[in-house]
Length: 596
Image (cartoon, rainbow, N blue to C red; front, side, top):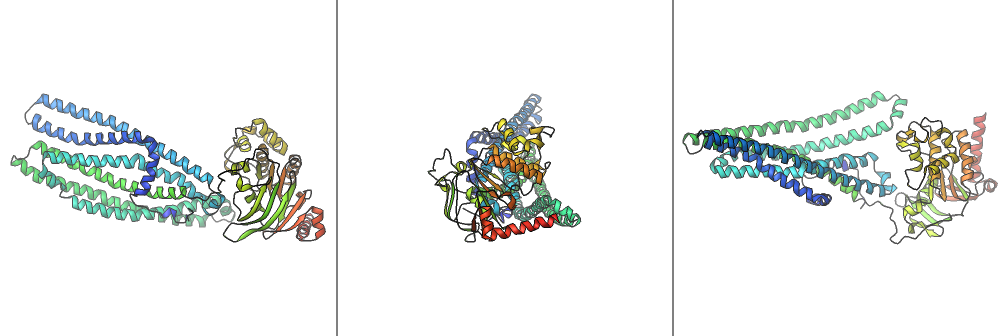
């Protein structure tokens, strides 16, 4: 199921959705023992609270009124014991609910991250990274509130209300009906509050999404903002978005500011009715003073869980909206499928063949058309062409980041669609122009923490590509910390590390995609020397704008608008005086201009 994620951040959701809840409960199943414990404890806690007013009634009617000091002491000890017992049970209840919440979101987060890793590149082409991060962090954290403070505590609040009503009806049903006479007003107020809060909640989420998107984009592009002196303009734009977010939150708070005092007022009215009606009954000796005293306590206790339930409503609504977004992502099936019965590939020679390959990123807008070529084991083949000719697309489909629309790509005579992605990529290393380094150290970025790559392999790979020279000059050498995206390293140093990374995996097929275009001449010479050693016995595909770097290739493929126009060696293509000849002339003239 593929889905447009454009409006995901505006999903509001119901306060309760049975289908979503059923799916969420699947994650609780492994911990149902703790769920049962938590529910049982919540029932016990719920009854211990209403017991105290009843004990107070006994203390007033049977001990204080009768001047029974011993009985009063016993009731006081019972009250103290109930408080201690409630505190102990509340501790375990909090522990189990938090444990349940943390374990559940741990499982959901792992499942979601694992799912994201399996999604194809096509998904990431159209989905903002910030939105994916929000799913794995904020949305899942909302579910933690649902499991730890929502579902179980809703049980607790409902049980408290039930137990209060049981005790109240047991003591005096007439006074209970008087107390509950204010409920219609409370129910109407709660309904109105939910409606208004739902609307304000939508506004808050919308403006929060705007704020997050703006921050992500403009922090990422901070260097562009600074170079063009746009700080003041962007600050004013941010201030406007931030102001809208503030107004939305204030509007949301306004409804809480009205609702909670309204509940307090209704509670006060109920207490007034109890004092008026119950006091009259006491004067007429048809109601005991202890019962009246207990009812006053019950009324105070009765409205407290109602206030809490209104808060739980927001937790439920937030969690349902978050779970809908999470399950939308989990249900996304933008995958590159592995075959049901994959071909076995224990070792490869490195022969590659493209047969009548057509490929489009979007529907029938083909970026590769009728591609046919063959690369024999150990050959170095260069692919050249203008920007947008389809060079990088060939790499994308060879590594199965995308699947072709028609045709065949063969590896040692086996269609790569008959191989698992992991089996295919095990034998291929790719060095890109835009190097990505992870937070960690130099050693972990070369070996990628792979268990089969020893430190000796990492050091040898670094020596072969010339990276060892600058690494040995660093204070901590291979243990030197690498900041996010390699911010403390130069472009050339990052490129050398990426070469060492590719070679540490000892690939049979090496792909260089504009790999030397971002390094200086001295570094490029180091890399060239290393490449000449490394390409021996390996199949290599080199994509390059600098034609001087590919003149010794066994074969050069010239592409233009997604089609192969020329194939041959450097000298053969120059003799043709076609597209390659024109590209070579242009670069030669550029070099002459630079020299002059």
